[in-house]
Length: 286
Image 1 (tube, one colour):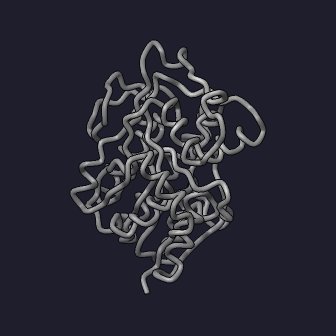
Image 2 (tube, one colour; image 1 turned 60 degrees about the vertical axis):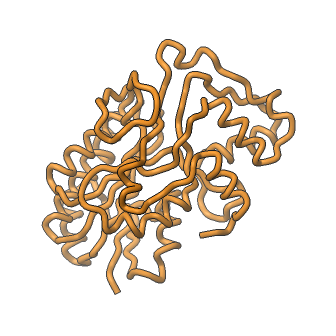
C-alpha cells in the first residue's frame, strides 16, 4: 500500500481527506510538533525517514484577517513552509499537492470566470503569499501541483471540524436573529468540501502546474446568500440578509474561476448553487 502524508490533518480539509483515504493509503498524519513545515531540516528528516509517495499539503494560516495583521507569520507558514516541502518532495521523489486560493485573484479589475494565467495583483497578504508560494514551489519542483480553492463549506450539522462557511454562518444568524450583509459588487464561488475531497484521487495523476479547483458562480454574493438560505429553508431571509452596496463599489471583487483546464483531466465541480443543493439533498455522501 502506498504512503500518503497529509499536513494539517486535524484541520477542516485535512481531516476529511484523512477520513476519505484511510482505507486506500497508509496514512501519515503528523501533528505540528511532529512536523513543523517552516523548519527545512525537520521537513527533510521527516520525508527521508517515512518516504511518502504522495504529500497533500493542507497546513496553512488561512484566516485572511490574521494574515493581514501578522504578515511575517503568514509568509513563514504559507510561503516558506510550502517551498520547503516542494524541495523535500523533489529530493525524495514524493508527489506534492499543495493548496492555494482564489484570493490570488483578489484585486483583479476583470469580470467573469478567471483563468489560471490571468494578470494578478492580490490586494491582501494572504493572496500575495499564496501567489508567491505557487511560483516558488513550481520553480523548485516543477512536478508539484497547486490547487486554487474557493471558500469551502460542509453542512452545519457535520460531526467533523467546521469552518466559518456560508451555510454555518447563515444558520447561526437565523438561529440568533442577527443580520447578515452581503456585497452586491462581489462574485465568488463556494464549494462543497466533499467535492474537493472526492476529486483529489484524480489530482494525484495531474502533471505539475497550477489549477483552478472548485465551483463556478455567476451570482453576486447577496443573491448567492439568498439562494443558500432558500436551500436551508431559513425563514424570511430577505429581511435579514441585506444588500451591502458600498463594499467593493469602487471596483467589484471577482474571485470566480474558470475551471476548464482541470475539466480536461476529467475533474468536474457543480455550480455553487447546484453544489449546495446536492450537498443538502445527500448530506452523508462522502
